[in-house]
Image 1: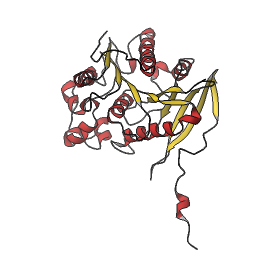
Image 2: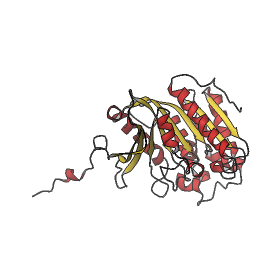
Image 3: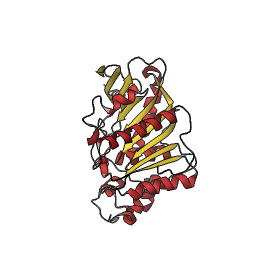
Image 4: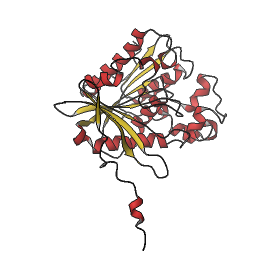
Length: 307
């Protein structure tokens, strides 16, 4: 008797039953751990879905991409300054009229670029495939990430590694790396060192794989077809140079793409060093930008704003 090896093939994540929903806050449903992709030889990739409990029509989607230097991180975490918020930041976004998807992706200890970008593309495909049952309007999709997640959000928005009808209409990048080959000019970064987070992400030091470093750099991928961008970065960032966001904003502007650049005075990485009110303002600005973009209005003319 021959074993039917096709039975070992993983099920299609687009038709898998969803995990049961919880209600962490009134009016908010949370579906935790939905499988969106089953890479061959790798762990299944999951996402959490924060959904309005009783939306009258399909809602726009924010895909939040966690940080952690491409090496670690939790999909549930917007950063240490938001961990004490009650209700939490994702519940705030749902109450403002969004669905929020928080995907995992392969970390640099599992795979090198472009695996992480491709994982986010598959998450967008999955959301579009299940938009009807989930009440999502994926023609109004925002990507939003912080630190390494901001880099991946920007790179995904600019290189579009998805095949479905999902449309990314905007991207928010908080204190994100944007140009691997420019890091040495912006800081004391050694582009030949093999143990940096950047080298681990790329699979080799940036100086050794310049073509791959360019391919992974959002500032080198800007075109006039880019969605609207909001870029926030602390002027006192000691981990990711402030100049990295200047590079991204300048590249988008030169390409004729709409970009709003907001320096956050005195802020270190993760919004360390600024008062709670300033952190809340970063969140409020990002929410207002998301509302403007997903209402199909242009949040500003192409160009860099530093107000």
